[in-house]
Each structure stands twice: as structure tokens, then as C-alpha cells.
Length: 394
Length: 136
Ligand SMILES: [Zn+2]
Image (cartoon, rainbow over all chains, first blue to last red; front, side, top):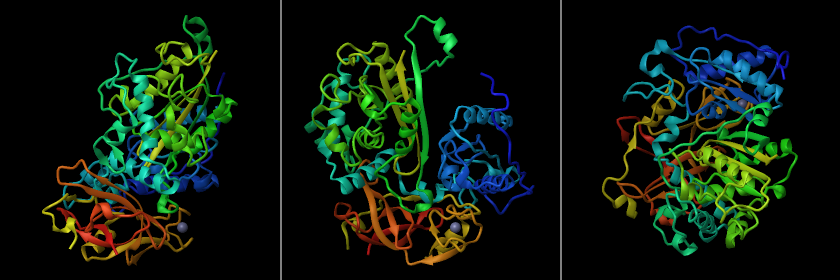
């Protein structure tokens, strides 16, 4: 398929400043975005695709989306190729628009090299010197936030709003451990009980040691090909039939709700594209940095009603061969592997094993022809990116 | 006098990264004043403070002194810390926005979601004092 003529550049704006001692790099991104949108006759609410490179302060565009107040982004790209990034982004934007992933793509660049060390994006500042890093840093990074306690905040509020219990969360670890016992490479192979989890050391209330994922070295890779190449290869064909993405952040602090994740947007987008529903999914890889991560995402993806996740995961409902939604049959991040604290790729890998029929026989889902892999990265307690893919065995 | 207060040196808050955008906030903090940003175009207050309004993209924002009162939205007690347990959480200010912070001057195990809290400033390691919250 040719992409010729599939998208148009409709707004362009060059920031007039050449020396910006009184503004942040983030602010220059914002002002440039506003200028280009005004040039096009569009607003921030029209933007549904955001593209930036390494000059954008923060974490892969998530800081900028939240900072600028972009509320409707469903496509994110922070590919970094130095000074050529933004030309490459135009090409990527055309691909995304042609694929129906977004309609209005915003590409921004900004920086303040004339301001010395403090003008370096992401660069810290020496005491007494002004910083120019992620715009939220000064107001958030000083409070000792970690993955444990920011996810702990989510769990605490989920328990408050919905009556979720530590025992219910523990069932998620129990299910993962039942799967990990069959994985010879799993970091933790011992089957654990609900009592083991709730009696393990409290790390950050209400999350116990066994509510947390493992810390492991390692890696993984995936190959995605065209249909023509796929047909030429002697392997089961796993078709990507749906995908969705969404960032979520505190967005100015109004209506903060830590009981749901960006999966409430990425999930429906993926399901709509695939033309299937949660009830059709035979196997799910669900990001499991902590037990609460799984519980929130199961609700947000629509496997059960909001607030019912605790009841849904209890009594082994996530255990392959036992429950209704077999999940993370490799043992997941909770027991098997969480290479370099990024569990997204192993989620896709185990979904592919299931669809190929190559999971361990003790955890292989019968007739597994439709699977979902979903992840959130960053922190559910502050800002994160959610991504969902739906895969089908052809 | 609460238990936490009676304890010797706890967690030291690192120096906040001050930017040209946030400098007025930290200058006021040094004087013990808690500022938030409000947009005069749409009327909404936001957090963390920006040079523009994240709700309507207007530049017409003003610093406003806040009494720094609100209620606990959520929190977590971090037990795995070499300097002893500390509490991170969000306060929903009476003006609307939610603020990430530490809860201090309290017995962490006594904290409740919905509890009223008030700002105070705590010294940082070589930077301006940082806003933290304690039971009202
Ligand atoms: Zn406004």
C-alpha cells in the first residue's frame, strides 16, 4: 500500500525567540504547539497524536502531554534520531493517520542551549541553579515517590472506593505462581498461597513483598512482518488485529482518580479495531508490576465491571485450566521475569506462545486462537502510557 | 507531640528542581507562603503550577496565595526506607487541584482517606523549603 497523499501538513509555526532565559524548554514546546495549532485553526483538544524526540523534557512525551493539557491523545511516538527526528515524525504521522490511529498529529521541538547546563533537557541543576528538566520534577520528585509507594497509593484508594481487599489482590500472585512452577526459567518457581502473600513483609501500604514483581536482568525481542513475508515463513502466523494506546496523568490536578488506568481508553480502541469483545479473549497477558496493576487493568479492559476486580480475580479465576481468564501463564512479572523493570515485551512473547500452542503443556490454553496483551508504563500513581494489542492465530 | 515528630532525623527532602516557570512559587515558599496558579480566562486553579492554563491554553494565569488546606485523597506508607517509614500521598486542595506531597507530624498508621490536612514548609537539602501536609 502506498501512503502517497494520505496526509497533509496543515499547521507550521517557528518560535520567534532566539534567546530564552525566562522560559522553560517545556514552555517553548507548549508555545510552539499553540502557534502551529493556531496557524492550522485547530485547538489542543483536536490533537489526538503527539510526536516528540529527546529534546522534550520528561519521559517519552508523557510529561509533555500532561503538561500541555492534551486530553485526547491516542497515538504517541517519541522516536529519537537526533536533528532529523521531526522529519522522520512527519513520515510516522502519515503512517499513523493512514492507519486510522490519529487524525491530528502534533510534532514539537524546543530547547535552550544558550542557557548553559540548566538549559539541557532532562539535565539536573546544581544547588542554586535553575533546572530545565521535566516540568513536574520540582513538585513531585522530592517526595520519595517510587514504584512501590505510587502503586500503593492506587491500591489504597481502590480499597477505599470499592472495598477491594489484600486477600483478593493476593489471588493474583497465587495465580502467577501456579503458572511459574512449570517455567524452568522463572525467577520464583514456588507456588504461594493467599496467606503467604498477606503475611509477607509490608513494603508500602497496602502492598506486601509478594504483591510486587521480581527484579531481573534479561531481555526479549519481537519480529513483525508484512503478510507477504509472513506467508513465506514456516511459523504459525499470529495476526495483529487490534491495537490501542493512551497516556494518562494528573492533568492539572482536577478530578484526580487513581483507581483507573489508561486502559479505559487503549482497551476499547483495540477491541473496536479487532471487532471482538473481552468475552471473546481466550488468554490475556496483563502487565503485572504489582498485583494492583493487574486488578485495575482487568477492570479497565472490560473483563469485569469497574470495582468488581477483587471478586473477579479471587478463587483462582486467573489460573489456566481453573479459571475463566487465564493470564500470564509464564508466571509474569510477579514470578517469572521483569527484565530491566520493563515487562511489556514478555507480555507479548507469552501471548504469542499461547497462540502458537507453544506454552508449557500444563498452562497451555486449549484452542487458544485469540489473545490480548496489555501494559502500562511509567506510574499508575502519577503519569503513565497504556498500550493494548489483540492477537489472532491465523 | 506525635511519634513521628519525636523521632530523630528522618528522610531529608532533596532540593526541588526550580525552573524559571516555578521560581515565584519557591520564592514564596521561602517566605512560608503557599501559592497556586489560577487562570483568569476560565477561572480554574491548576497544579503543578505552569506559565499557562492546562485546561484552556490561556497565558492569563495568576499566582494566588492559598491557605493550603484540603483532604487526603490517598496515601501509602513506605516501609522500605533506611531513614524510617515515610508517607507519600495526594491532597485535594479546597481550591480543587490534587497535590502530590508527604504527610508529616503524624502517626502514619492513624492517617485516613478524607482526613483534613494543612500545608507547612519543610527544609530541603540545599534548596527552598518544600510544601508538606500535616493533620489539621
Ligand atoms: Zn484556563
